[in-house]
Length: 254
Image (cartoon, rainbow, N blue to C red; front, side, top):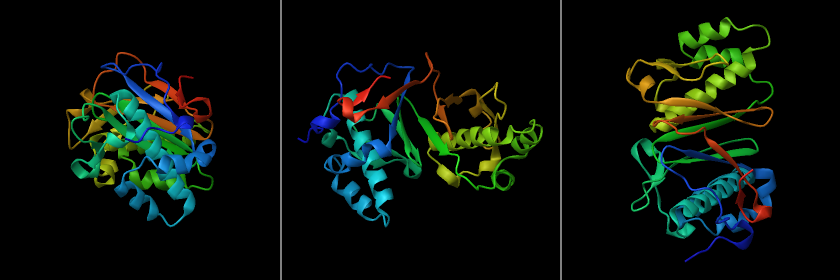
C-alpha cells in the first residue's frame, strides 16, 4: 500500500464533505514543481504511461502533479490510500471513481499556473481560465457563444467585455464538463447568464429541463483568472475553496 509522502500528507483535521456541499481545491504548479517525483509515485501504471506521452516537460509535470494531488485529496475523503483508488472513464470519457468509491464525484481543470479540483456528492464540473494576452476574445465569442450571449455581451459598457467573456466561457465549460460531454456538446446550443449580478444556465435547447437542475457558481480566483463551478444538486452553503499547501503538511484550509 502506497502512502502519500510525508511532505504531501493530508491534514486529518480538514473539513468533512457533507451532502449538499462542494469543496474546491486550488493548487499552483509553480509551488509544486519540486514535488513532481513524489506525485508520480502515486500514479497508476496507466497514468504514468499517459504522462510519458506528453511531448513537453511542463505539460507532463502539470498532469503528474494534478493527478497526484487528486489522488491524495480523494483518498482523504474516502479514508483510504491513494493507490487503492481506480480512476476510470465514464460516459463520454469523463473521469470518475470506480466502485466501491464512486459515491464521490470530482472534476479537474487547469490553466497556466493554476489547477482546481472540485469534489462533491453528485455530478459537477469546474473550469478555470487564464486571461492569456493577445487572444481575440470577440472572434472567439462570435464563433462559440450563443446568439443570446453575444447580444448580452454587445450591451455591456466599455471595459466590461473581457471579464464578461471569461465569466461566460468558464460557465459554459464547467457545465459541459459536468454533463460529461466536453466539446462534443455544441457551445451555441445553450446559454448562460453574462451579467455580473446573475449566474446561471439560461437555456439549453437540447435539454430544456436543465436550467432548473443545474446551478452555476462563480469561484474566487487570482488576478488574470476566472473560474466557475457547475453543480447538478442544490448546495447548502457556498463552495468551500481550499488551498493546497504542500510545504505545510499537505492541503490546508485557508
